[in-house]
Image 1 (cartoon, rainbow, N blue to C red):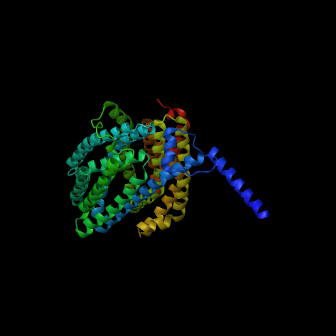
Image 2: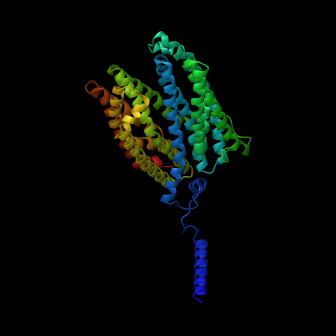
Image 3: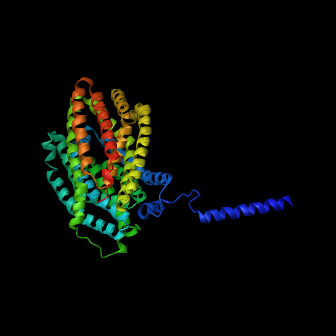
Length: 486
């Protein structure tokens, strides 16, 4: 009898719970997928909880972080391969690396000018408009990158001599720059396709293809450098082939497979760039391009401050920058997620959601890079030991890395905040802030501290400048003017 009563009670409770779930479907905790969470951003069917916003940022950030870290690992492995060839080969690539960084940065800025517009159109549920922006970006980007590539190829034979390099490395440096310049159209198309996919909410695919590209780069570099014995030019051709394969996969996925942006949905799209699309691309991309150019000048100036300090300081600085880049890549991963979410929220005309995603991303980025800063401080000697066996370089590198570890939280603030402003299409003032900070604060302090403190003084200047820049970006973000929707 007691068993029958217990059974009846259990059945009644189950029916009551099922009825509650039907009446209040959101009363129970639900884990929505990434696409379902993004639809809440675009359609605004209901308010998102803090947990859902954080989950969405994490889901978008993790693939991007993995891709960023693999990219840095690729650069370190490439440098190690060239190092095995000899000092002359490493120096020839290092001589033109700043120029290559500038050319690649201009391509990235051009791609960002169009991909951010994709986020705005997707946020407004204007998928046809987003696809037209991609089409126009491909046409305009190809024209821009071909002109830029031709310019790079024209100056390649002469640039090493202009920089005052010795004759024994000028030939290799010129060949390397020539090959890289010819690959700029491929680089831009890859950046545009990857950026458009990310801004539409598909971060996983470009991140996976980015990891694939890094793997292919290492494999092809080994093949061309050591198996085919092509030396420095082999490193350039290995990267060229890896980028080409990745670009084909990236553009193919965008054009044929992506459920939001694939061109099969409207074959008669607009390919000729319109004045409005170009104007918006210029407004977004021009400040980024200018920033990259002036930043190059700042890096050259800082290199000029470090060069007289001796070979140990130069090596410790180079290796320290490579190692530190592994620590701030998570900030860039969170920044990519912030660009996507702020851009789509702006397209959906939800300024409250823009600010919410901005601050959650900022806090997440700062916490993540704070943890990376602790790791860098504790394991600095072991990290330096992975890239060099020189005791003096390891000791000096350890000291400068431990100085920089204190700046990681505020460095994260500047990285994520800048990405937020890019997503909002407000790039002019943040770019000026970056330039003013590095030219006025970092360079001035480095000039003052380097003569008495050596490389440690340069890195103290960097630490102070990054903290200053992060604080300035936090103040800028706290003002609501950036989130106004016109």
